[in-house]
Image (cartoon, rainbow over all chains, first blue to last red; front, side, top):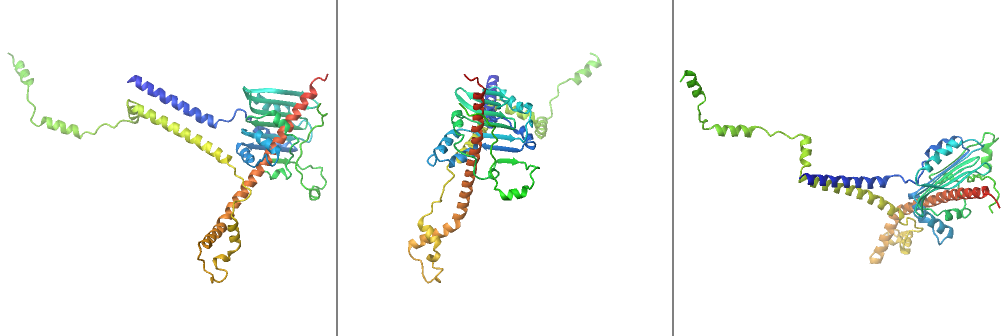
Length: 225
Length: 181
């Protein structure tokens, strides 16, 4: 009788543990997703903030409208985002240098020192800026990507969760542009630009010129090759 | 024999019980309520064989059901999202559109002088009424879905643009810093 009881209890414990593990794994956050919430404190100091969050649901919705027959680029994008779980981008552009410290950058870097992450590129340059390209891989499959770009007047964090082809992602630059309409109109994208005090007549100027989408501040660098 | 011995013998002699003794004892015993088991006693009873086996099976089945329900919900959500939610134009028959545009078919416009008798006319009338009632709500939903999908696409483009540009910047920085021959 004691043996039967012990066996039954073991079975209950085993299946309970199995169920709890399965449920927990279903709800657990993906290890390739990095926490960027603490970067929001830069928003006050930044001249421009670009915050884009494309989660799995939005990716699927976007994929439903991408048509490879309409444009080969759309086909490439559809192929690239296949299996992705999310793309998270935060970019802060500052008016002057020194608005953020390396300690701020290290708060993100420390997450990328966790097991599973592998640094594939690490650039420390006074001229070009500091760049970190870190991937999370399992065998030959990349499970996640994080790119940190700490330039003099800008700080960018890109986090892609899911299997991503770096070569294909790299090829995409220049194949499509910033959306034609204002970024504020896209739900989920927050772009904040501070009005400058030195502007003499901001209202007049607003009336004269049409609102343009924000552009990325890219430091001038010699062309590659 | 002393007097004490006699008294003791009298005191310890066997006496038969009264005739209704057994009946009275049984009646009293039946009247006393059974002691109620406490909650831990009941729990212990559940953990005793063979009940334990059934409890184990029940708990495991419940847990598996709960996990399955959660996973099914997640999968169903994913499948629903994967369905092509965007359609450019809702499928309307030409006849339906024509009917919606020409309400004279039901005879109300010409003072009811014309009666509807053929099945074709009845069908046309039905199509006209359903297209008038259902189509706007359906179209609105589709328009919202298309707008959402377009917004999601633009957002994705922006995210990919920044990701690609940042990655290329890093690549350029690597090449810039590498020693040149």
